Length: 344
Image 1 (cartoon, rainbow, N blue to C red):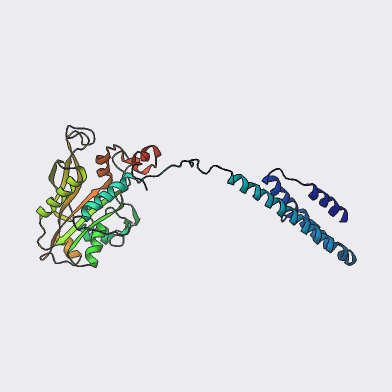
Image 2 (cartoon, rainbow, N blue to C red):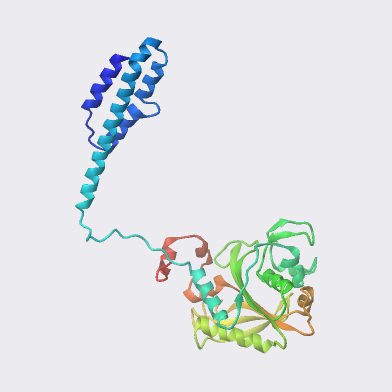
């Protein structure tokens, strides 16, 4: 053992590292959990009692020598690094780094919210996993009603009726929760993500984003609905944007309509976005069906109201001339960097 200690001591005294990696290798070799000093202490356990009295002190001194050598070398390296850093020119420009931007869907979502907030609408949210009552039945979708086939649903639990659990197909479920848990008047919008079992293409996806609105009070009329949505379109796409309403059908509104705007891409001349008609449908709307009000505990003889719903992807397509909505979920930096004017 003494011969080993003498040999290691000579090596340590002669050691001069050229860099921090060599110093770390020195620490591991001698002071590491599997280092030479650890081995010497294991060997020390096997020597006789008389030898332990002699080598115990020698071994501790050797360990202290090694630790002192390592600490001195480490302090010397740190001192050199500090001196080097103090000599750097602090006036030099820093390294550049990439700056992120808001997603185009977030930009349009926030703009829609701001427009309706100025009209007195508040923002309401709800769960993305819903039961049959809030997603269908309360909204005038009876069991086995063919209107349920209008929405291809991702079911989590299917039990042919009221116990069904699914990913919500629209944010209308938030309207039901609001009407159940409060009292009129209501004036709110419900932004959120929804899911439908559709084939993914340039015009459709299995998940997308909606903003729905609800206004319930006494003496609310279809004229109020038209004026509200007309104002929204002028604020979003600019004055001069043409609007038209077409009769339609939705189980939860009566009468119902779809609202078109003049195509912002071709300016009405005709393109593939508007199917060469000059018009693009951006939302559905109508007067809340009295059955829906009654399902939620609201007196349909005293209160009336309107509701509307729009896809944020469709609105964004028109606003930024984006022809493939798959781009919104692919995280392609070549696409997203076009919106870098909006800094996070």
